[in-house]
Image (cartoon, rainbow, N blue to C red; front, side, top):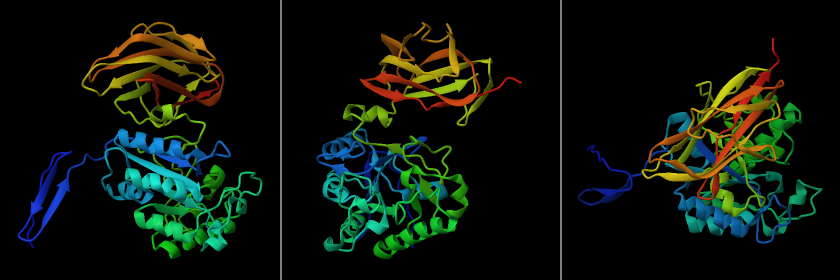
Length: 400
């Protein structure tokens, strides 16, 4: 056996050449960020019947935007290998998921995925999956109150998508609220759905999505017993890989309420502008604890990773009811007091310029008014879309 090595720069192609073979190698940058957007869909329809569904044209636009910004789709098995073994992910990973197993994922979504070279993860309600067209069920199987009836996938369609590279995981057998059922029913729903998928596809099923986002930490100890490594939420935001909890994986709610023009900002796809924060000169991914009546400093740092200078047109701060703005520190780049519209503090200007690879800051003096846990929200406008900062979690405690 002969060993050899090849060093290659990102974005370039080179090859191993032997006497009777040639292997082309393309260099890619590994993932070195903190955040992965896991996009949570349901049905994909030409004519939607409920806002939770997504127009086929909007799904096409989503894939187009992801491709334009250089994102590549990964699966939960890819994510697990990264967490367990440090296996490399693409520089810009993203995950497209859909709950329940609607047939339109195959008829409308699958052709779009193939055009863009993307794959997706579908969480199946396995009790609703038929073997043939004659046994095809509808979403009324698990949602008897719906007035929007949609057909559900059958196994031949699932097998075709799986062979292409799409991933199929569990959403239970009967779409039950796992946080409310007995331990025995919890184990049945997950073990049986896992068995259903694995017996048809031959691929290990290690993740499930909580139906109705009915996540319950009291059930977490049963997850390994059911044969799973992780569980996925819905509508909880973009996953921070620095603090990922495999039993409580964050996922972004995605539906027709979101205009396509906001996809870039909503999913935080443009990472050239990055917003950081710190309270009293300290950053933490968990929550900050302050006393009622205590003043504290919150600083936002808006970083430009481009080589050239850029302009941002506005900044918006949303404070919870139990925290008030005392003053804007004059030592920050932005030092004027904001306007207020619908309880949102707004700084608007055409002169907010960030030098290439530079940063600007905004320093705020705040005060806790009343006990309670809350989140401070902040965003800026760049190229016509919003870039959101991670929410700042603050608990105000009663004064001792």
